[in-house]
Length: 226
Image (cartoon, rainbow, N blue to C red; front, side):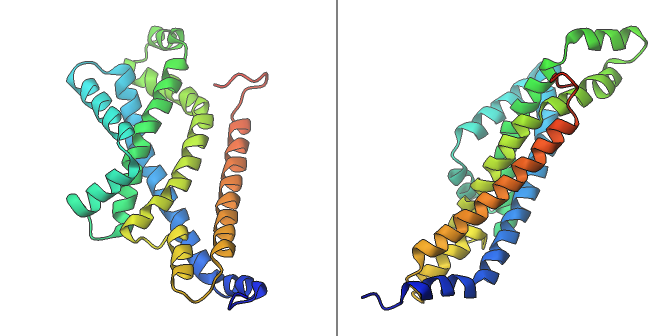
């Protein structure tokens, strides 16, 4: 007979729910910061790949290939233990996740920009807009709308990838869950990870439904995105 009755395992989870929720808060913050950094770097990178030429375009494309082809675990370890970009595990994880997300977001936005008919850019130029103004005022608003489905998928991936920050000791949700059962205070490993999985599911579900609403709100009647 196990030293802890089954009901005490769930009681142990309930008693430490505050710790799990604190870890959830860090997970949400890490996801939001990483996605924002990814957007701030990824959107310009996508635009460079579409509209730029020469060394800048090649440099951006090469950086994207390297980041997309390198496991996130390796990036985090390299930044934290190798380059020591920050003594803060949160900052390091944000940079790692943000750079990796930027590499993927750049492709989402590149595809969205290329999906806007070239004739619209030419029409904007014909009425007196400069090239940069035409891109900013005509192409970008449409591309952002068309990128929502891809961005939704990327958001979900980054949310789940935050768990990899466990390797540098960041106290996000998965780390908290692992610390609880490894402390030897309970046999509630299954119960803890079921609770952690449920929290991840709720976060993912709420995020997806929210972005579904955004996608529907900005869609054009008839189903065409613009």
